Structures are given as C-alpha cells and as structure tokens.
Length: 115
Image 1 (spheres, one colour):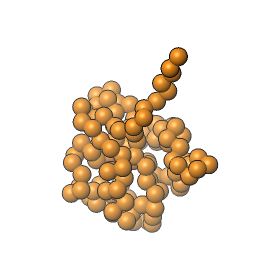
Image 2 (cartoon, rainbow, N blue to C red):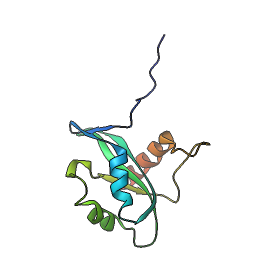
Image 3 (cartoon, one colour):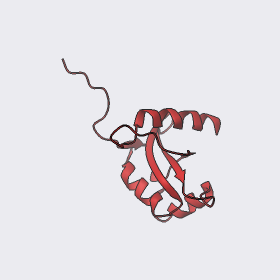
Image 4 (cartoon, rainbow, N blue to C red):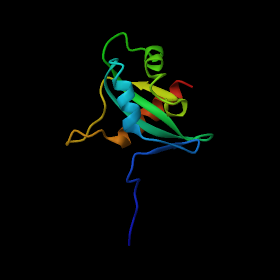
C-alpha cells in the first residue's frame, strides 16, 4: 500500500498560477524589514490557495504597508501575499526546519482574526 500524506513540493497554486514560496520569501527578505519569513498557501474558496506570509519583524519599521511597498516591484501581483501574519518566531523542528503544519495553524487563526 502507498499512502500519500502531503505534497513533495511546497508549490502554491493560486488562481491557476504556480507560486514557489522560496521566490516570495527571497523578495520579502530583500526589504530588510524581517528577521525571518516563511510563505505558505492557505485554502481559499475563490483562488484555490492564497499566498500567505508569516514574518518575524526585524524592527518597529516592519509594517504591512512597508512590506507591501517593498515587494511591489519585485513580484507579480499574483505572487504577492494576500495574507500577512506577524509572529515573534517561526515554529521549527529539531533540525531547524520550519514546521509547516504549525505554520498553517498560526496563519489560519491569524487570517480569521484579520477578516
């Protein structure tokens, strides 16, 4: 028996377009407004998945508006996060990799509070 539990790739499919989290994370990092960032896809009724950024602000200047302006010329509109979550630290496993399951939970709670 073969049981497939999840995707092999972190690729996000939003509105029929492919978005790779590493590209979005790199663009967000270039703003120097975040100490750490992870990008995931949240289920969305209209788009399939919504690009969601979970960020650890680097300083008090790291606002939603500043981040959106900072990536506007670096990413196509469909690649820009629809939801943003700010946290004190990203959940990581014992190997130091981002725990995507916990990240999903954090992002879902945050997106519901911001609607």
